[in-house]
Image (cartoon, rainbow, N blue to C red; front, side):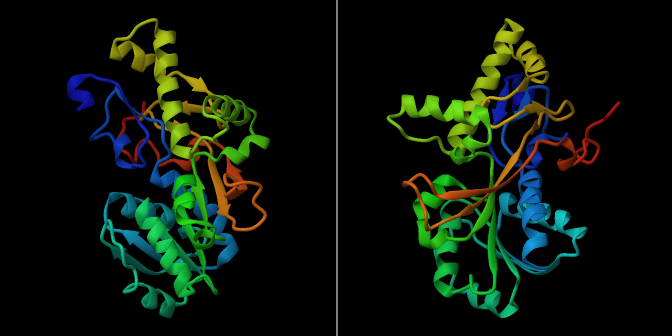
Length: 290
């Protein structure tokens, strides 16, 4: 639609396909992380630490499928063994049919490749079933809002990736600046990961409008694809071939003890810096590279 209508679109969705040549146009930008980058970062951190045998519990739609692909590609060089990719319907409320099978497989790692309410429900039920005994549970995307909804006990010890966590402000100056402005505007509250993404997506477009001194989509798009910025999490830029924002991935682990306040839900374990090498190549995505 952006190609047909020549209207600028800066997406904050987790999607591998949005930047592929078949759907892409000059007007298509992707501010968010994508599954290949997110899953890859979590895999590079977690797989060497917790064992070789992996089970995936996967929401049966594009998000889940793309996340599994990202983990498996990153895991190839580490000799990871996929014991099973168990798929569940989007919006499943009951995971009891899957949990005994997972337990019987005795994986070192269980990857919850689902999102939102699916992640909350599966994390709660896996915890109640006792899967954390002998198995490390990880998720490609571990959101602040999901952790708040699911609670400390259900998510305790679960590790994952995120685009942003307010607690990184002691490591990243722009995060501290962003958090302070947010606290001032919203009675001391802290920004969520997707709140920060929305801010960055809009601010990038506004900066491009200023840089182009124009509002027509073509001129703004040309300015946007040249942007180098640090709005809230460290340096970012849009890759020329596909307009994917090259950025850091934050690896976090949920905690249930030692929390300073209700917002102190994660430990920041690592920050994988922005690096184009962590993305699929432009050629693989169908783009012609001169």
